[in-house]
Image (cartoon, rainbow, N blue to C red):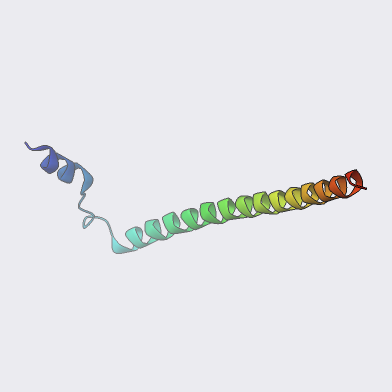
Length: 72
């Protein structure tokens, strides 16, 4: 048996034995969980960006303060 044929046979599964409503319900649940994970990741990344912008602004202000007090 060729490797491509083995991979094709193991990755494909006949879902016609399951009722249509069960497949739709399972697909909906998978989509909801995936969207929930994506929203959590986006929320964490937005908080990270907010904190980095705040720290960068404070650091820049401190740098400018040090530069202005250092030169007569």
